[in-house]
Length: 132
Image 1 (cartoon, helix red, strand yellow):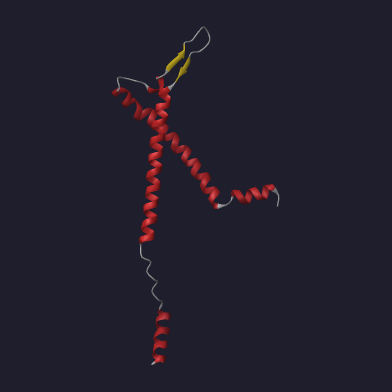
Image 2: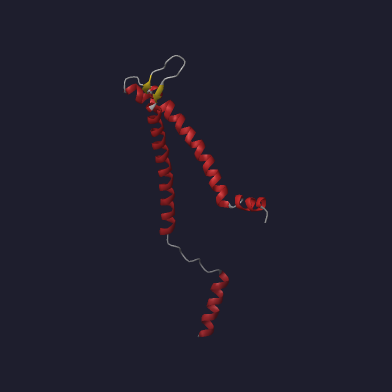
């Protein structure tokens, strides 16, 4: 089997396609959460902390000299990324928790045996009459 045919067979399996869709949707979700945190969540928190803009929080390790830029430790952006991560992790946790509870309900539901068809009922009646 040529490498191209083998790759096509691999890529067209259901799990691989599902995973690819999940990664794309997850990436888009991450961007939405990042925008939400940067533009909706962090400004009020910064305002409550005395008008702090988290993207500008940094520790200057070496001041700028001439044309050389300053060396800074941008911990405000890190704090914002941590908030992004916490929100995304919580959202994923809630989705997984919901899926697990749905699976649990399916497993707990008693599986009733299917009712016999009319033909089966008639055949069983005939069988019972023949036994008598």
